[in-house]
Length: 389
Image (tube, rainbow, N blue to C red):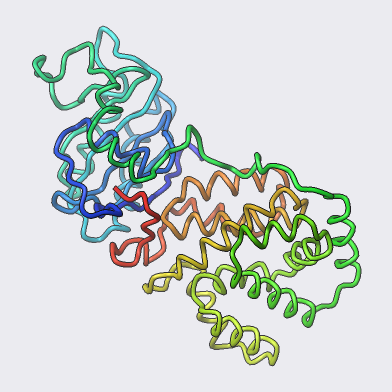
């Protein structure tokens, strides 16, 4: 992401099998990749806390060295703005990830971390600790006691072998080396046949009625098991092409996250019925509030996961406009979970392939504001996903 941007991610202290208590630095550091879903590099990660409970994680790209005191203070003030997405937070731990190693004169990024910590403290946040994670060792910025924090650092192996990390692995968490950005989507049989169907559907251009039928097909797909449906679609270029072609209709593309995340099967049918009759004012207002994250109720995560699995599975058959639509839908789902880093990676791929795709431009600007959906700032409604720390 841009050097002056930030990515907020949700993380809470409830693990799938109960509360996970971590009391040492190794354990805390081991949890960061599990909370982010990937191993950060050249990043500042802020673990935002309420008392001793983790409220959220915030990751930003490290700025270029030597940006100056004024720019660093401005960045710290932006961090405070992002941290206020967790209104009950009162503290933080700071972690720098970089390939740079300790120099004779001290730890790299020392001045940067001092300015950031000071700014957060002035705004009422308690700084519990600050660490540097290098390629093979880690250090504390705040402790100089050689008995626990030697100048040579402590081995990262301690982090990897910590009880907290081993428990997360046993529970099924497996952070990736880097974020999935949609560029490696696999293959699809008979892609040429699929694309012929997509082209024919677009040339037919059935307008509003066609969009309604497309939304009906997608709503029906959300009631099926994604793996079984994808297996059938791989041997059916016509059905695959019809589904993909409908994503060229903005109504279908924009309504899908709402249909999956805010609606039961019966409610999806009601939504289609209202759209068909064009009596849409109330329902579309609900749709807009949900898409912008203004709703405080928890999304229907099972249905959203189905949309994620189906959208990711169809990416190898998608091209051009329908591929961009899928990338944007997947990015929104990542954002809805509080995984803005993953959302940004998908939007970046979309913009690289289609620089003028309007929805990607809008989502990119939206992500740059660092906002989280309202449900992601509440431990009761945030996505748990089986790997919370």
